[in-house]
Image (cartoon, rainbow, N blue to C red):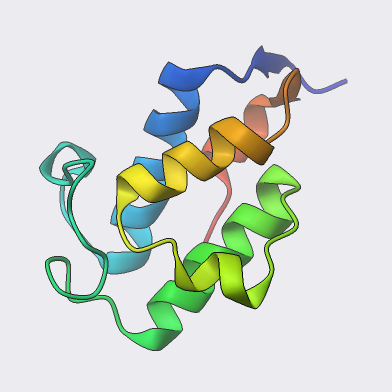
Length: 100
């Protein structure tokens, strides 16, 4: 049975920041501030943004409409969305180590 970790604000933000860094090929997740704009500041392509949205949907169990996705412009926007609509409980520890 997989170990589970309680998904709280701190580890959710770390998990999301790490995945965005991996998708955008940023060497250190710590370089991504919560105000960093995905496209303008981090130079995310439309494909990168789609991969981030897919990650949120598939790995965190979020249902994100196209209109909601258009409003997720910064890491902070994504964290706020996860806090409002994300899973409240546990997620597999394995999520932190999923391949791209």
